[in-house]
Image (tube, rainbow over all chains, first blue to last red; front, side, top):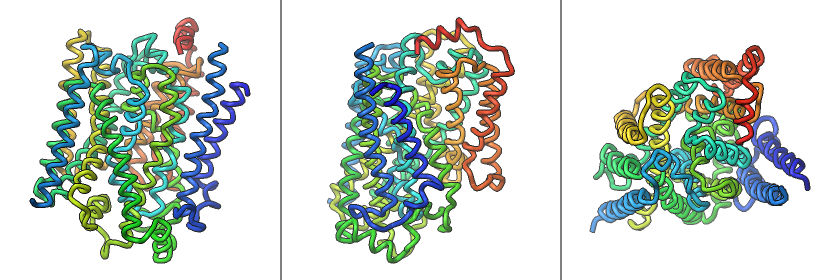
Length: 71
Length: 488
């Protein structure tokens, strides 16, 4: 994957994350049930995006690192 | 032995340990401004991880988080939502900032901005805005520390004495060791906060309700709307999506613009350390989940609502008959949250005032500068302490808008790093217009459309002004811009 694509995907992830935790993107997920691992749905929703961000940042770092070594 | 004596003894041991770590840390750095402010650019991954996490999460997260969960329900989720999004751009911005720091010797945010847009007035303005935003923040940390100590010692150590004790120690180690003390004490405090939060956050719902799911089922049945974003206002009315969303947005923009966080880019050992800190930050962020659980555990537990929701955490600790040892450890965790942010802020505020508010106007030797910074650490601490003793202090009210001010640093930083056509006049007029707009709407909350945060309204004026004035004025000398950009 090129550095450009990786950066684009990571940026897209965080932009989408911002959109689905604020109005109006958050509206469909603003509910209590079903409880996920005991947590209200909207709390689990935000937590899942945080967990996902670790994978995204780790992934982008792998690509960036490879390109830095090539430079 | 009486309960409060055991608790006090544990707090004493914790404070002593913190002090020793803070004082020892100073031996590692050189006796120079670079050493005092940026730790000779030597912070490794362990220290960076905890210094970032523990500085971000303050007494507001540790006491205010449960307080919001308890009194405002789903409104508290906003605190969880912004951190990671605010931190992520630093994966790319951080190393650029660090490279400029190494190349030109910058140790503060304003030096970086003024390095690209030379203006002493700009430097002074940034110093003043930073100070105005930082002091009330420190005040709140002090009150938090005092409140916790007062509650768990059952009033034997009153708020004024608790705050004085905790922050006397903070001032002592910051005076002596500068940022090295902040780094190493935050590592100790960060570990403490995380362990305590997870332990208590999982324990209380299980002990009181039989499980986390069972707890939320009960709350959802008793108060169906309580757990649905955007939750409630402080007064118990339904909160607006405009206020909830724009608070997330302003926090995303403002988070890394806080001087005490931004300046840590200059303290990191190398670029990989900075990048890994960003990658690992979400793991720290998740500690807010158990912190919220502690507050939610209180919702059906208190027969009548507490006067001060922020005291729900100490209240739960005292009422659930936990062993004195656990109470003491919890207290140390809460103090850690307060002190780890307070020390970083105190250090950053003093550094910024000297480096950006005084040095551009007066020639100082390295030794005079360090002396002046120490004097200011003491003065800032004293001013914040006086305000902390007065619960109705207008300084505390000012905190509500600290993010509105701090977020105005975002456009100048981005313009400095990424926009060649930006000019000094554009950046200066944008900052003045944005800050003035934010202050205007903060003073007149009724004027805000859709209850949008004043910081966002400020940015809506700031960015167009920055762009328009830059384009209307003569472009900067290309050679100077190139010299700056190539270093980044």
